Image 1: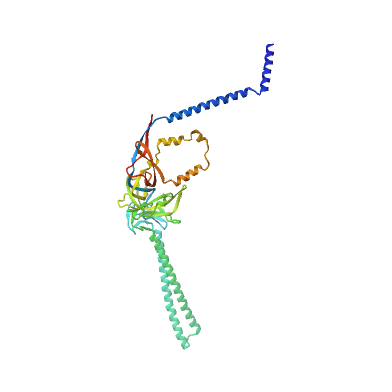
Image 2 (image 1 turned 135 degrees about the vertical axis):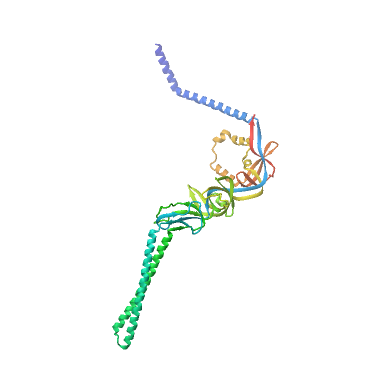
Length: 432
């Protein structure tokens, strides 16, 4: 009986919920949103309280300072490259053959015309002898033809004399004339053969001379890439046997200048460079060439620049890697401030800037062109900057205009600033 009553009551409750539009899912959902709103409210109260407490903290700040100074400013462009001789010559063999002797070694000083190496000349000498024999034969042929001319000339003369008296027929006179003409033609051919034989001999003598390798310049042997007994094949290209440097007391430094800096580089500018072999020593140099042609390596565009180097002490060697600082601008007696002073901003200003707008500012989207507009303004005012003067223990802003900079100090071109003023460059702070 009781169970039947419970079923009836349950059906009545279900009918009532259905009539009023109430169900358990809706009740649970409303309960969830209610507590979510409560949690968000509590979180907002905590954030606001923390900001109020944070703003109420006492700050004590100590500042690191420096003085405005007057002095000189050097602007340099850095580039790397290698040292090379002013004139470097590769000496090779124009003919194929076997090396018989090598007469010089690394670092040997040589004179122009000095013999560096000799090749085996047995075959070359045989060809020269053959060419000489051909020339001798051609000369003998010339003499033989000349004798024939003399003989035929006499016969022709007698035939003409006899023809005057009627004792020589016309046919005999014509035959004598023809013999003489043939002899003259043979002489011309023999002389041409002599010239040809002489040319062949000269060619073989030239080839024989090439078997002796001479130095084309006064200099020093940098590389010797040949040994006695080595076979040289000069069929397609001249094999290099020696590399000579003309004069190591004068050298060249070839550096690659970045395309962003090449506009500041000019012939005649002074530079200094260092090499790894003498890390604590600098060497002077002067720009002699700035190439117009570019070089591109891995997408980086550079321009080769050549500097003249005095190497009288012979400390520098070809192939050394050097790092050069090229002086592109030098200013004297100008107001200078450290770049750290231009970068400094008081911590209070930083906190105000970072807290302005708070959460709502970060949630509200900015106009799409706002960032671009700020970039344009910054670009137009890139020389207008601000430094902070320490007065009565507090930072005071001063606006000024800047000029050239070497990355450490910057030139001041205008502004209410003078030498000796104390500028803030950093903060040493603590919170209480």
